[in-house]
Length: 100
Image (cartoon, rainbow, N blue to C red; front, side, top):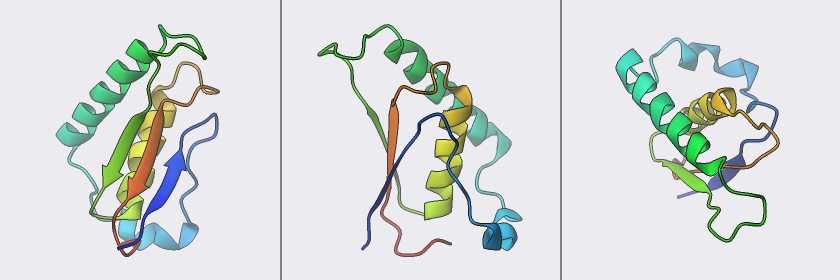
């Protein structure tokens, strides 16, 4: 079992170009994507009330078991909802042994 970590900052996660055939498959239904985006927006809005050194500040850990591409897609969504792109709110790990 391999683990990889990623964080969201101002730049969205990079997705390798050789994965076009994988992205032709659906990673999420539109409903599931909206639910994930809604949760990401809620965490980001709640987190924005804390200062950088506030002890109540937290990180949201996103763990995927299906694929690294799923994690990258979620982190791209997280990056797109961030109002303060320099702030780290979301970090991710994939427990998948492959990228597909």
